[in-house]
Image 1 (cartoon, rainbow, N blue to C red):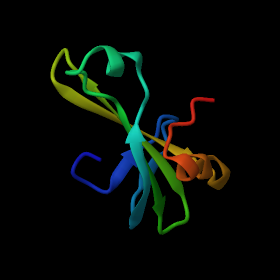
Image 2: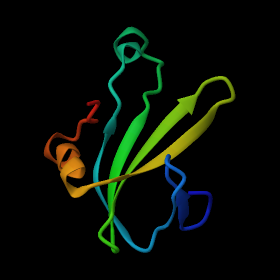
Image 3: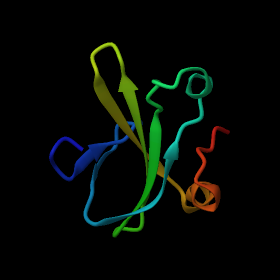
Image 4: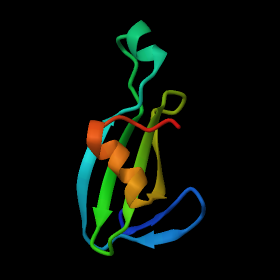
Length: 92
């Protein structure tokens, strides 16, 4: 969210965030996490909006320029439940 309440999903859909509740948050598993203690893991969060939409937010740290890259994806309720049950990223 670039200092506004509008995000663009990975499929190009512009989505206005009205009110939202964070339901789940976690790290994206990586081999680097075990091998390198200084590794900054990628993270995810699942939000439920007042317009009854679920959003998956993924944030990736880019070491090359020390920046964060955030992407958003709309989820169905069934897809969101997988995250809520175990707070793990669904890689399937």
